[in-house]
Structure formats: structure tokens, C-alpha cells
Length: 315
Image: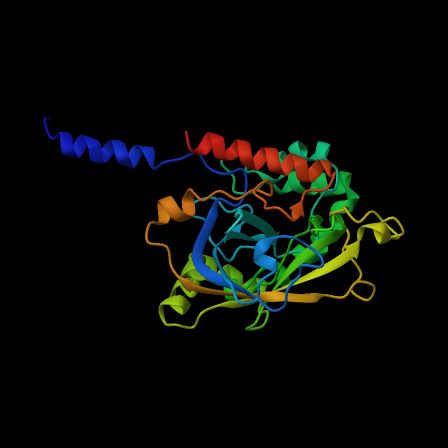
């Protein structure tokens, strides 16, 4: 054969087969904008959280934690909502999930968690390994209670709330620090489906959540979310009844109520799925002045895992 144009096309196709992510491989993305309700300059020097007259462009990737390429989107699982803010000071990544807690709190348990969640011997899910991990790590039961409620089978990404789970630190221009947790609320309301409907859709329309998101944006029914935060002054964190960095606990809303921050609107679809969605890279290490990472071993491990994963995927 001497059709070198064909050779080049095949070579390009091969190079589009990038290594898979550790988690959250099955995903969909959209662009939008974030507008601020009120200035938060008393809490952080992050520029996109100070000026209410300015909108910030964003890219959002929704995903299934355990879903591989081609898997059904409605299967019971944890969902991710990763938001990249394109700010004047650089890109800021906020990684959230639709469960308010995580399986573990100790970084050393992460490799064992990965083994328990990944498929073995060609099976989509090794139930024995998974439940053995839960039995050996009772702190995971809090997440299991959420996962096996209807929250584990969502109706639409447009009606999914999301939580940062990790605790972050804001610092204002005077050097005063605050600890925060983020929470996205869908303005169209939260909607879930039963396990029976999720199983039906897995066979009838495996890409139901992607189709729903794309169709809504194409028809001008733009999905909207409200960002709220819980804020704890640094000095008050020492008097907290439990470790504020523990990912298996939620912060009590009665003591630290949600404060409304701004609105996110998704209004544009990607034009190149591979380059813009498959190859997009999110990590807590992508931050801007005014938002810091606290001394948290599991969060530091996640930064390394995601950064190194990106180095491997883009080679």
C-alpha cells in the first residue's frame, strides 16, 4: 500500500487511544459561565470570588467513578462533577462528587480501595472483594448508606447535587484563614430514579445521562447550579467536635450553615470530544492565590495520583 494519507489517519486513530483514568473514565463535558452573588474578599483573595460584575468561564466534566468506556451511565455508582474555572490568575479545579462523604480517610488505604473497586478477571465488578473491604473498614459504611439509597441512581446530571468532600483553606489579603467545603445545588431540583428504572435504562439507553445533558443544552434549556459553601474560621476549627478534614464525616449545617456563593450555567457543548472531554485534566493541585490545600495526607495523595495519571495519559 502507498496511501500514506490513510497511514497517517490510522496513526492518528491509534494515538487517540489514551490510557484510561484510574477512576471516572466514563464522562461527558460542557462549557458555561459562573457568576458571583456577592464579594467574598473578606474570606479569600481569589479573584473570581471578589468581583460580582465579572463572569468566569468554566468547563464541567460529569462522570461515573467506576464506569469504564462503553458502560451504562445509570448503574449504581458515585458520580463526579469536576469544574475548571478559567480565572485571571490561572485555572482553578474544583473536584466534587454526588455523595457527601468518601470511603476512607487514611491515605494508606487508597491502594487497597482501588483493588476492591476495580474489575478482576474480566468481571465488571468483584462483589466479594468490595464487601470484604467494607467489612474491614467500617468507616466506609457511611458512604454505603448513601450509595444504596436512590442517590446512587440519578435521573440526570442536570438534577444532581455535588460535594467537595475534601476540606480546603481560603486565605484573604490580610492573611486570615478559613476552612471551607463546597456544595453544588441543581436549581432545577434534585431527581433520582429507582433501581428498577436504572436497570431498564442501562439496557435500553446506556448513554441516557449524556443524551439528556446534550439535548437540554442544544434546546436552550441550560442546566444551572448554585454554589454554596460552609465556612469555619481557622481558630474555630480547633474547637470542632471532630476532625474537620475527615472525609467520612459531614459538617453539621446547624452549626455552619450554607452560604450562597454564585450560579453556574452550562450553555455550550464541546466540539472535539476526545481533546476537550477525554483529555481534560482536573486536579486539586490546580489552584489560584487565595485557595490553599491544607495539611491533609489523602488530599496530597489525590493530587499526586491525578497529576501522575495526567503525565501518563498525555505521553
